[in-house]
Length: 231
Ligand code: CA
Image 1 (cartoon, rainbow, N blue to C red):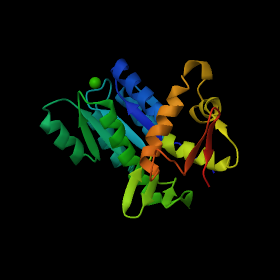
Image 2 (image 1 turned 180 degrees about the vertical axis):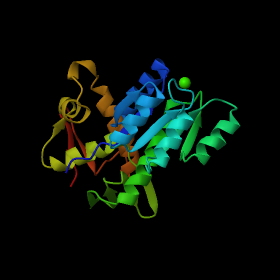
Image 3 (image 1 turned 30 degrees about the vertical axis):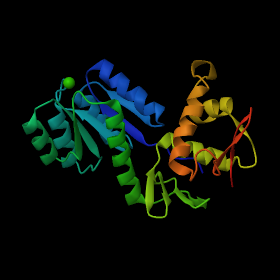
Image 4 (image 1 turned 45 degrees about the vertical axis):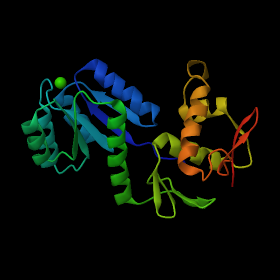
């Protein structure tokens, strides 16, 4: 069962910011759509099955407040993170009163925003509570919720990490090469991404899930070839 990609709607009229956010989230395994004004954002939010919306407040055609208000009036519970201006305390309060779930203040670190998006997605998935659950080497994985547990310790997986685990597990017994990962998991044309991307992502994932990352038991290295599921 493949990991269902969480979908993010970005409603932001600054093209550079919208593009930067979209790229960062896609890299983490999210599917991303962008709306550049409030009206379009609202109709996309109503139509599409999104997991999270990032909502700028100062938008052309329809403001972020109006979007939030009309969306909630229509009964939508779509988790929403507002992108607010520095020092605009009133904006934040008003947005939260209208039903936003969280906010970040501009300028923000993209990493921080991605972490907030991960948290919102996890919340909605927890409520749904479906997914692929299994255990290996003392680690219990719940790929539907994008969580892993070892004893009382909880580890949050990005959608990309969830896909990597799911792919390796589905192909257990086989060696998965870096090129195969890029093609099948990242879905990028291999020529455009360095294979180092795979190694870096796998190294970060091992730090989370392996008891001893220098002697990995869950995701094993096959020297000179690639990676293999340890189960
Ligand atoms: Ca704006």
